[in-house]
Length: 165
Image (cartoon, rainbow, N blue to C red; front, top):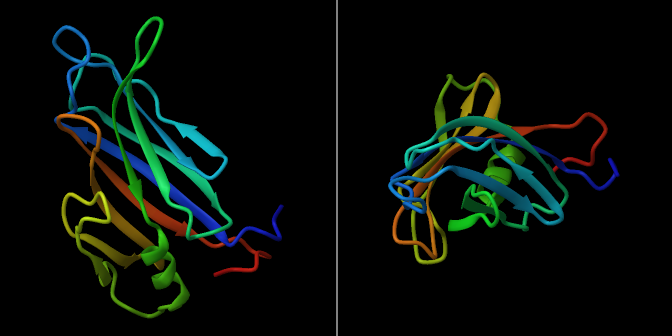
């Protein structure tokens, strides 16, 4: 397994903003993060459309071309209601990792990814170096729903002995 890994990405699901109402006046949202066959889940935050998760999920990266998919749901007793989805391309993050930048000031922005019709970005996304780590702050606009955004922070983690990027 380790031979195929190029690294790990820590995905901090920070918060949801203005998520859709799926219960009487609110929702009980959670997020599923998928990449290839991997499936990770945040905890459920009760009765809010502006949840603060701050949950850290770690994805194993084998192919950086595979997008990260987010699916937001409202937890219910029987069937959970969909509250939108989004995709994120981690290729720009991996490109910065490949640069092997060292010796720069903390929080130096290396690359910016702009919103366009091919991505789900709600605003410009900065990829930067912090404490020697490559990080990216992302705000994704949810699709297939009337409203809602999800804020994430990504951080690349090198794996000793992996083939690297």
